Amino acid sequence: MKLSKKISFFFLTLFLFIGIATVANPSVEAATIDNYHQNNVNLDVKAAIAIDGKNGQVLYAKNANQALPVASMSKLITIYLTLQAIKDKKITWNQKVTPTKQIVKVSKNPDYSGVELNLGHTYTIRQLYQSTLIQSANGSAMLLGEAIAGSQVKFVNQMRSLLKKWGIKDAKIYTPDGLPNYTQGADAYPGASKNAENTLSASDMAIVVDKLLTDFPEVTETTKLSHLDFNDHGKVTKMTSWNWMLKGLSQYDAAFPLDGLKTGTTDAAGACFAGTMVKNGRRIITIVMGASHKDGTDPSRFVQTKKLLQYVFSNYQLYILKKNQTISGAKTVAVPEGKERTANLVLQKDTGIWLSKNEKVVGVANPKSISAPQVAGKRVGSIALKAIPSIKDADGVQLPATVKTNVEKANFFVRIWRKIFG
Image (cartoon, rainbow, N blue to C red):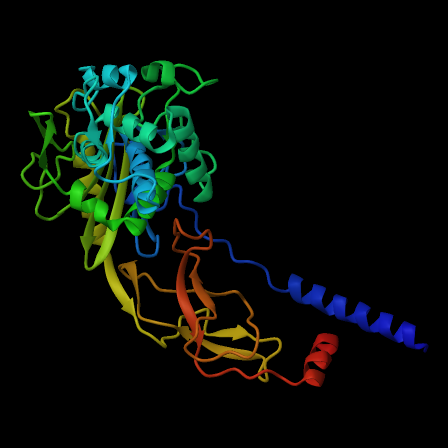
């Protein structure tokens, strides 16, 4: 056989074996988020989700992938961009800004939540930030957008870009405050209907909250405040948080010591609430959307949040999986170029996971094969718990993994032989 034909035969054989190897490794389907354990608790809301912010583990979900109006929970995106702009030195806490006529009009509308802003008056970024979070001040949120981007429309475009960067593709954003588009007057988003409202799913809203708390954990220093004064050139407005689950307010419960985060209400959205608290050193995030809102005294969103938290803490226990522990289903990982064809896979570090009664931890190696050489203790990938969904990864909760002992690389001839003959 001529040399050229031998080479062709070599590569044909190689591709054939690679193809067979690929087909022989079917993927394991991951659990979906949308209605995870929905039937385990009856929540009177349109959509809800509860997650662990550390690893994104979904503890409960109801219609969590359904896009719905989010009302003033939108302001959390505005707050993220505000804190990012401060971090990037584009604005400062003590910088003073002046509202437009439209912003003043919105701030003085008795049908909307907020504190009144006045023409010709200046307000610091800190004041606007605090009133946006505590009093859910719509005018303040609008003015933050103006200060950061120069116009409402440009700021809304920044909000949209941020969500896309986070992998949230189906959100519809029109205003920085969550009110319907028509309320923004001349600042309304062009090309959108007057009644257009910001819409996200509960799982997407959980991502927004998680990003905010991860990148700017200091936000809870403000969201945990039940009351704060807003001083407008000597006129003091007593602000009270719309989060009635805070200490000192009507829905406070010592079993659920929330330190945030944000409510939202419109006719289309109903009553919404993004809540958060720390339990066993882990930050729990809950989202409820479309709860009852008969009037301004209706506590339904907080009642449903308590019911959701009660379910989570009654049915789950936090387990700490130990460093160097093996996980069923993922005890080994393929090493095609290794001196040994497989390596023992273990947890790289202590890792917490919430488990219900009699629930077992079963994983798969992610990726299914690793390169050689590898050093024990260095992360080589993850063990994916596909039966336990996560908002951070479509393949489920990811546990950092390493090899139990050092992995050596096979010599050149052995690697070639394996590629040809398997």
